Length: 154
Image (cartoon, rainbow, N blue to C red; front, top):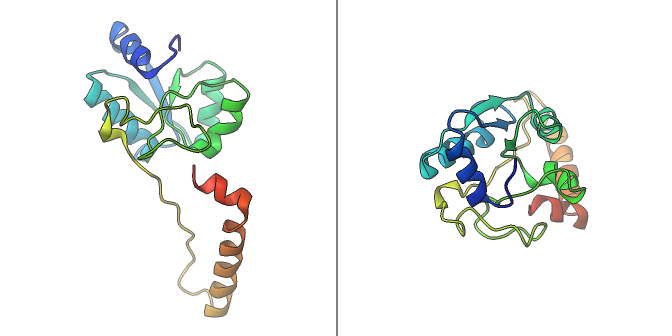
């Protein structure tokens, strides 16, 4: 993608109607919906390419097979730090402490692209209460570690 910022991305897509696609980690996910929102708000027509998860989609972006992707910071951060992908915007209400120089979609005039992903831990109903409590305690212990707090605040 020959663009340095979101305005240039949008200009490029407008100059190449129907030729630019974006990857998501699966159809119907927030990653997919973010592209739909941007299409509508910016008056562009990026084509969606759904993958079976973020890693294969990100690999194809890095490999140049798909020019854009809407992805979570924790997954993309290693590629961003390595200079393999360029972040144009974050969907958080405020800038991410992990990417303080990357503007929010809201700052760039696209408030409809503000979103946060919620992740849950699920068990089948027949798991004994004692096992549920142990798993919950272990998950909370891990999530309280400073390294994980930083990752989760992305």
